[in-house]
Length: 71
Image (cartoon, rainbow, N blue to C red; front, top):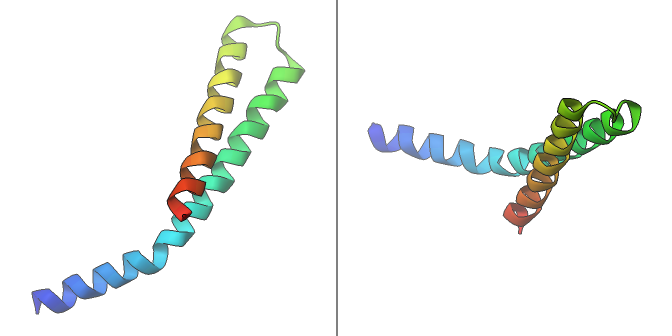
């Protein structure tokens, strides 16, 4: 009984894995765009600039991570 449940969970997660990779890439692209948008709108505030750079950096890492995991 436990083996059947474990196999069902494993197969479900294996089927969902590519969806998670694509979701990581899409979220990364959105973070980069969001960071660039705020960077060019109001770059004068130092805290906002830090948040923009953080969004861009995390977005790039998410994109690279999603691409590397797909291969």
